[in-house]
Length: 140
Length: 162
Image 1 (cartoon, rainbow over the protein chains, first blue to last red):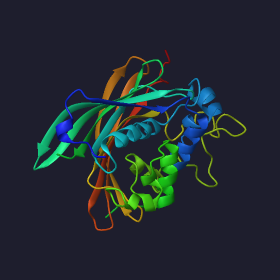
Image 2: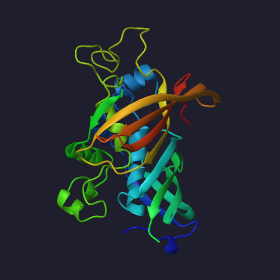
Image 3: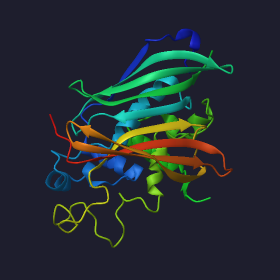
Image 4: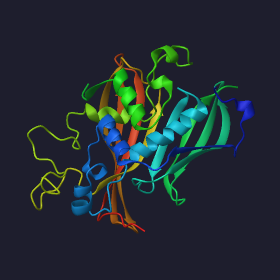
């Protein structure tokens, strides 16, 4: 299932829908699993009346985690060596997200092949919510 | 070495994978995982941040018997003028370097050190103050497993919505 250096070239892409109509319950699930219980993500009364946002919003790490699913589906399990993102816009309940990886570079270092990817996740309005990069080990 | 222990458990990995909506069997099915290249259950790429569960000083977890800044009878359990532990702080960046895969049965020791700080004028939320923090995760043999760098941003006011 691993990617092969001789079958990859700069500009290749892989795209997946991460979630259709994100629920508050999934955000609660993420709070429980991750241990990040910030009420901004699960508590509308606090978030709207005290923090001044229109509703709760997803943990950035939930979007990064969902985007990671697209990456591991593409490069294979246990193949990532680097994965980093910037959180560029908030993700709200009801959002539908699509993530895309684009091949930037295929290279060899000490006999091991790697692919460098740029990563971008957008919402239903085309706004980028997560933008970053990743590197994975690939086969020759 | 300072830091705190993060015991990695299979059920925690399963719940984390469910929460990020990843049905991949390598995160919960040991028989399936045995036949894959990693040869056993591994943790999803962003799982290391679930170390928050084990960080004794993590500020975004309610403490038994203490007031919490989220809502109960009132929209916040804190008194007027009392700042929540994360007042205006948002997550701006997160970066992981994987030196090897995290597996159930690992006992990671997490140590944290502060990184750089910088400021920037934001269009939608006033002055932004960025703070970098580096976490190193070492295993039971002292080997480095994960290096993580996170950047938090303190906003002057809530991010304006378009």
